[in-house]
Length: 291
Image 1 (cartoon, rainbow, N blue to C red):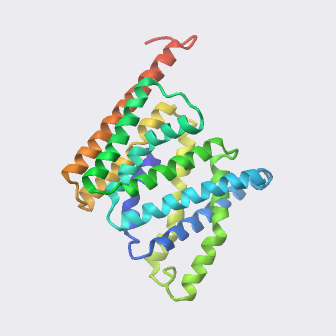
Image 2 (cartoon, one colour):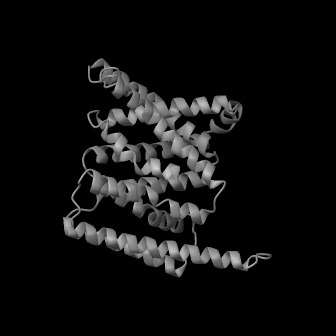
Image 3 (cartoon, rainbow, N blue to C red):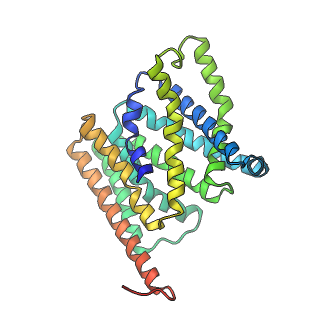
């Protein structure tokens, strides 16, 4: 819940840095996340294991793709929040679980139960309705959902754990990040050190607010069921949605109400079907007493 609460309240944090260009926000987020992650690897005595497993050609190739996906996702999110599209970012993360299921069917040949096709179809219909009513697809939501779903696919089949994987991803991006930050500083457009102490603290803190919820999430997955993890994942887009509508007064038109309602119905069906399937599986397990 702590991890999802932090993710859900991200818009408030990025709004404090709205005066900083999205490219620089992304670079500082990657830079300070990388510093913290490498420090965590060194402090936990895992550097030898990390070096032994991470620097292989196939591993580097897989995580290079993951790094591209996460950087596109982070940039799109930060830009969208500060451009006034928080509600649409929440739509992307509401759609994401359904898109992840669809990607699993296509690329991993996973089996989709009959009732799971219903929410996937409803999500597709919601996107078509949004496109029809606004005259354009919900590009922000689609980019966020698709990049995060592809990122999840890569992480599922890649060999490294969450700490080592994210450390390698940010490490691969670090040379480009440093080059860009040196460039903007050389042309007098850098925000760091020039925007005041509060701005500097928030830019460094971008790494903290990125890494902390990831650690909380990784710890939680070892202690709770996947069903519970699946239910809790809707906390963050719900909080993002409330931030957009209530806190920042973004427009929530009748068309958006219909679109979001379709997606929420789809997620309700998806969640109930998954929970009932899980309960049936638990009840059928040998030695599992029914209540």
